[in-house]
Length: 64
Image 1 (cartoon, one colour):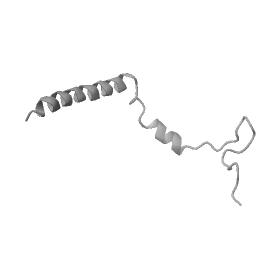
Image 2 (cartoon, rainbow, N blue to C red):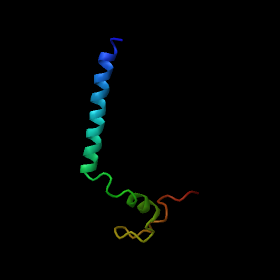
Image 3 (cartoon, rainbow, N blue to C red):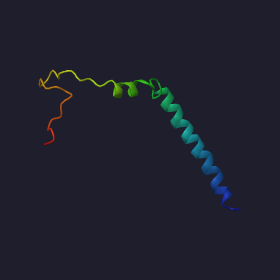
């Protein structure tokens, strides 16, 4: 029963830490664009790279 005197305050502190972390992530813009990163992965850019003139869709070392 004495362990409850330790576990209850620790759980309350943990809840406040999680709440503070969630509040910080909301204020810093972590959840502003949820769909953009997923679409950027799907919309692959296969145009010629400007820096070296190679096709971006071709692998550097093709398998033999």
